[in-house]
Amino acid sequence: MKSIRYSAPGKVIISGEHAVVYGKPALVCAIDKRLSVTFTLAKNSEYKDAIFPLLEKSVLDFLKTKKEIFSKKKYTYSIESSIPIGRGLGSSAAYCASITAGLLELFTGREWNKEDINICAYQMEKYFHKNSSGVDTSTSIMGGLLYYRKEFEFLKTISSLSIKIPKHFTETLLLVDSGKPFETTGEMVRNVGTLFNSKNNKTEHIFNNIEKTTKRIVVSLMKEDMSFFIENIQRNQILLEQIGVVSDSAKKLLLHLKKNGVGKVTGGGGKKEGSGYLLFYCEDSSKCKKVFEEECISYIPFIPSYTGLVKEL
Figure 1 (cartoon, one colour):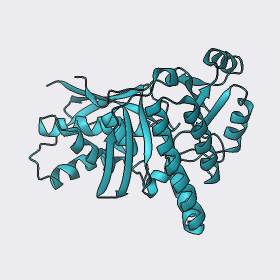
Figure 2 (figure 1 turned 60 degrees about the vertical axis):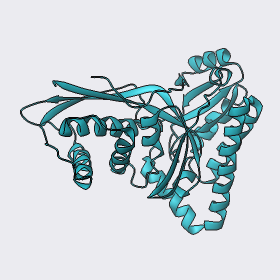
Figure 3 (figure 1 turned 90 degrees about the vertical axis):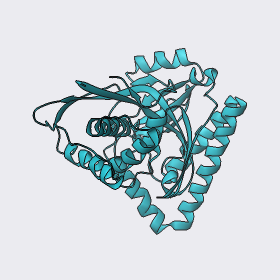
Figure 4 (figure 1 turned 30 degrees about the vertical axis):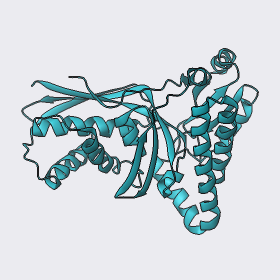
């Protein structure tokens, strides 16, 4: 064995962000942007950033908990990624998934199942987002369209939906960059937590409405009802604004683009500057793209991926 490489996709939360931290469901889809990590045996380990030893420790702690026989080998690693960083598209989850799978195999000499990889990667993800729900790593590892609910730390429902997002839906959807958030996802989660603690009844009501919206979007996909899908994307955006995760600049961008379509924040959002990528429905995708290019608005296609974590070497 000379090298091991694993790759995992990014993700888009279609509905349920933030509410998923409080036991509500989220509908999430993996996208065709991927991150890969390659591990190569070496005489000395080379850590390229300060957090990596902590990520390695997560894997070692997991192996000890499982009472696995393992050998901590020395290695170097390299990372390649097409997932935009810090924009709510799950780059850290894909990073954790790929690292976990690679180190587990490197230290034990065997490939691991996705369930165990997900358990370990979820703990690793907490170094990036302390109150992580686990939805990002689950989607990155499983791929496809997931309906996810975390009732307790020990009780999660991860349902891989058999349906795919209809082609005539994806042909009208783009991911529009509203700008990099000033806050981290962890900070945005804490901000929503502060709101929940200070205005519990009001926030719980909003989360309940987000849950209804998430379920309606699932129905819209199953029935291939585009108008119902669009209606609930707009509803979801309003609810996200009510919990304070949408910046003024993102609101202005959506208002400016209103004649071309509608959209919503996807991911943790942001308040002071940008709010990351927006899932945007275009009435006329060709016209939309032309407008974006003329006005230098950054965007990427929304292309679902039904391939999760994979071993490449």
